[in-house]
Amino acid sequence: MNGPFVVVGDSLLDVDVDGAATRLAPDAPVPVVDVESEHSRPGGAALAAVLAARTGREVVLLTALGRGEASAELRRTLGGRVGLAEIPLDGDIPVKTRIRVDERPLIRIDRGGGRPGSPDAAVRRVLGSAGAVLVADYGRGVADVLGPLLTAATRRCPLVWDPHPRGGPPVPGARLVTPNAAEARSMAAALDAGSGSGDRLADHTRRAALLARHWQAAAVAVTLGARGALLSRGTDSPILLPAPYRASGDPCGAGDCFAANAGVALARGAITEEAVHSGVVAAAEFVASGGVGALRPRQPAGRSAQRLPASATELAAAVRARGGTVVATGGCFDLLHAGHVGLLESAARLGDCLVVCLNSDASVRRLKGAGRPLNPVEDRASVLAGLGCVDAVAVFEEDTPHAVLRALRPHVWVKGGDYTVDGLPEADVLAEWGGHALVLPYLSGRSTTALANRAAAAGSAGPRSAGASA
Image (cartoon, rainbow, N blue to C red):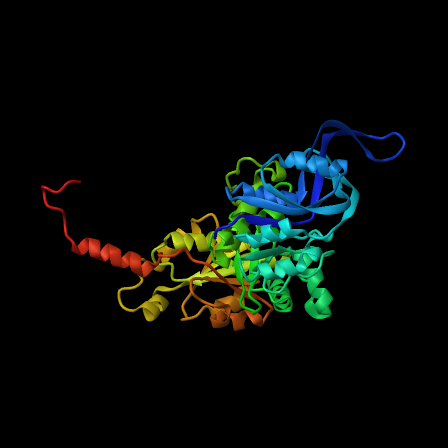
């Protein structure tokens, strides 16, 4: 869409003081930090704007700034990286100082803060020209004073709202609202004390649907850290957009990175699922590469190996006994292709073990007809077991995996493709023990049938003539 990407919200000044701690103070049992470096950087909405600008999009930060030293320092640190539209601030912006040792926060000190004034005509023009809007609400008043203008913006362009427990609700009509798991939990509890405090995907699903309906938002994406983001449109059929890999590092700013990249994707015309996926991938890379100091993404780390019990049921029982999450998926997996591998890798990241429920040869023939499977079950199971993301394979003879699921009792059942959760017959089985069914997106254009048809067509073409080029 034409027009700049406008980030609206409360800006902060973040100060990182890095040092080493090798001893305790003589007068109290606290570490002594020998300061090695100190630097300031944009925080809050200003950080979200800087991260959005890294995508190459024209970005304007609409925020409240005062006349104090912290506001002046923020203007300097922005350094022309983004456009700036200011609302007057009575006071100065907050300063958050983090004392860090080995790149990990030891303590944070907060000071300052002010009250935003009224927007002028220039601010109204900026919002009127926006190609998309991200509201990075840190609960300090900017979103409140711009409420009517933001409501009007939802009728012209995509609006993403990153909420804060101290802030107000998103304006009705937001294209996407992006609370993290803790924020969604507290906000849902304020609406319905029975929304629960659990951390299962089913719990997040209920809360996301409740919030989407209450806020009158087109969609809510609850960010779940290493698990990715759960996208809800106000129904009980969510979509989980998993993280591409487990990223370890300082997560400070990851939520801003997620919201900024999702908003930029919407500005470019992406559908909501694509935008959320873009945000999840960007946030993982951001954390893996060092958070706010990120310059280069790190390569994904491989999944740790583990010694497995003798059977899938024993594995599932062992994982449950130690409080882990058992994930299962199923299918024929006749000719393993990129769509299968992508699904399996995504499913594995949802828990502590992945069990593949595999149709036997007789089961495949009944489902697919004569001539299938192309590979016998021993070969199919061997190929699946050789994948690093698969922990066990359970072969079943029936037309459905219901019996093997009751033996495994997984916490999560995953299917890929064009299904909906409501259309999955396994969902009712999972409900017997409180399990949860999920649909993950498939790579488009990949299917065993299409692959087999291409192979058959190539074979019917016959050998090349002697004069044909190799």
